Length: 438
Image (cartoon, rainbow, N blue to C red; front, side):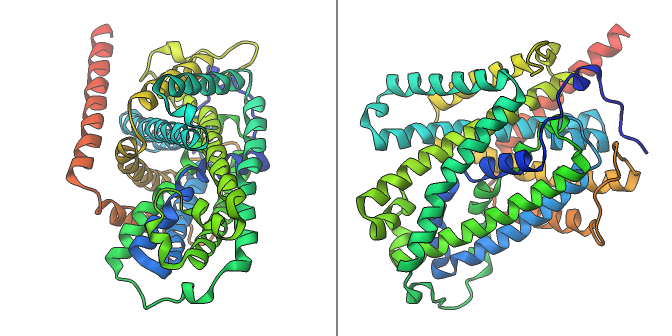
């Protein structure tokens, strides 16, 4: 069974993203603000056994990556998981997925934007004033929107440069810190309880999220059946190895003190073996990492606006492709405006609450879509990705996502449910209007 024909606006997009560019986009989007603070929080729950949480979370995300590879190789439309759900279950379920994808993405990037301003305030107090924060954020978002509006190649070139720049401090931290690790600080007192591991994994999901955002511009990926699986697995392997190495160095140099350094644990650890220059390097690395996250988001999330408008769930205003640059210009600028509003009026912690639950529900929908697409035999222009036992990935991944969601509070579910209920009402109103017009 062939996938649905590509709409005319979709055909106007340029397929310019290969394995290297998409891998860089995934690494850049995933390695963000979380890894600069989460090592202390995981150590607080698990102590020296903290690397175990990274292994468990990496294994879960590998199943999600397998699911994304299965679905992404069968559906090459712009929109990422939204497009996969649309092909599998139709417009209503796709609308819910699109709302979750947009909600998790925009809340996460708004939270990281707020955290970026906090980090800048630590480096230079002048950025701590409300007016300076607003002006700085407006300047950053305007620059990123302008670059991405000029063309997808300009956006991806910036991502590749920022990815290297933000990974450099982390690699220096790992390589230099390896010589100062105390083996005794890594000794496990025994296996931690299962509920403690579960809480730690729930924390780490934020550090691993981002793959689904980077896959949103699927309509601009070269040979998606080949490129998407390779990029996803290359990126995930690199990210997991980096995260474990960071945790080992931080734990091995600070020992039990890591759990108390919840503000900037990597900077504190770097100060132990690199002195003041190490603290500065990691603080600047955090700023660069958060800025890189914004770069990747500005490439990806506006395409969710475009995809929802393309399928009639948002005004057609957002489907306009610039005739010269061939980018979804209006969607990019609208996204920048909403991020500006949210980041200026909220803090990181509050924005991350809804984003986490929305993302996990989105992963669950992706697992179901991958199974349905494979069952229905939906294929794109090339043979889909498959390996022996591939369908176990969505089944096991969905079960583990439900396990993680069991740790969420009723309040978090209620907030997410309210957003989905509003989307359902909008869908019913649209259907009624269409029936009256017909």
